[in-house]
Length: 314
Length: 236
Image (tube, rainbow over all chains, first blue to last red; front, side, top):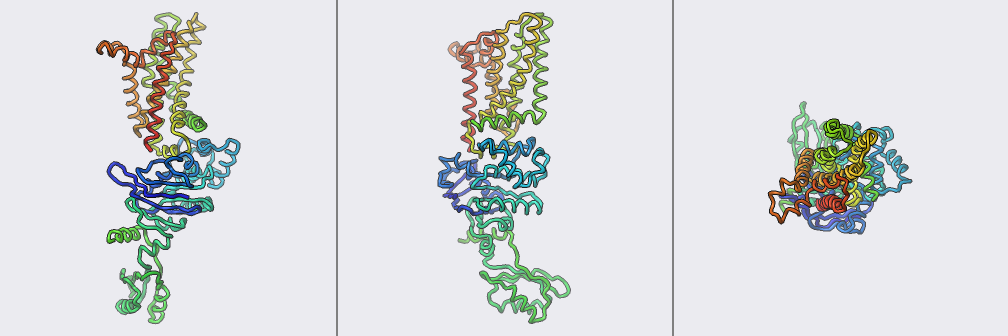
């Protein structure tokens, strides 16, 4: 559906996007992940035709972006970074304006907007001014604006940034509900965020591709294994010995004394080995009381450090 | 063209969604009426020469106030990103914004039409110069508007757009003034006298509608609108 080949975009001094290539299949939800300034926004701006790439080629639905900007813009719904809206306009008025600008036929326009308002849960806000809405509702208006024309492709730049956890869940389910048969690209700098919605993830670092895969693959690859944390009550040396004797453990970190003989361990294992069961069995055998045991969700920073360091070594 | 009309409607309504429209209209009418009535009772004549004499100077301040927000505000709020990713051609965006500004100024000018109507009841009004004056007003207004709209592209700051527009409009306006012309080499005099926005207004407000003046104003307007389209296209 979307084919990006070697695009580069330079601002005065810095290279925002550096020979970036990736593909997005029809029906896929792709997450663009990366810290601030990694080039996520610039990439999205190029795809939506807001900016032109200095070099490289973008093909959307078989059309070259350079020659068919208008046709491609028709296929795309776009929620820009920070969700810019006109605070003085009413919600309904704004959506009617966008629908008119998008050339929706006048007869079906009203119906379509009622449908979009229902889909985004804006019924009660339809006649309020956008400036009076809470941030969560503003985000829904931004999303409604992006889907007014029922686009094939949806591009969302940090759709949940600045929202509270409940609103995040709502927006996420909204995206999934709408995106059942759509192609979606969304960006974020939080991994769990992307893991919850996306089928595939691309990691960007200073404008370059730093890795891609499913969210689970990304976590495993970044770690080179799994990380399991547990708290055991027992002699530290003996526990460490036992763990070492397994042979498939990469690293044992002793995270601290929790009092009354309990110690917190963090263990990183090879590949896709899951040692949670082994830890439990070990605790039972030796009568060491186990009071905590979990596999961690990794922060983007960790994945990121790992990927970038790996790249530097190569 | 649908895009241009949809944008025009939004921009026009935007003036009335905020206090801008009301403040503008009241201030514009107060200032122009004051210039009119200042001389009216002294001169005791049924004519509007004074009114149209001061109008270009009033426009010099008031039109930039109308155009300053058109792109600058959009840039500041970030909504320009939504606008430029809609499937609408650049020239339609420029045209839509220009038309909205023009219609808005037209409404304010329309209210001032109460003046000649009153005059025609008081005595015999020579409608020629009045019609010419209003036509010239619209043409001059369009030229100022296109300049202001163009300059509003260069900044996120509305005040900067406002001042820049005053500067450029003022420069173009005085180009044909005698003070400038006497200091120029003879060869340049007809050229500058033709370029000046003000010179063409003088003949129109006398009631002489010369196609050259009309073509001149339309060309200036078209030129700046064209630059604007070019600018919006290039910035991608």
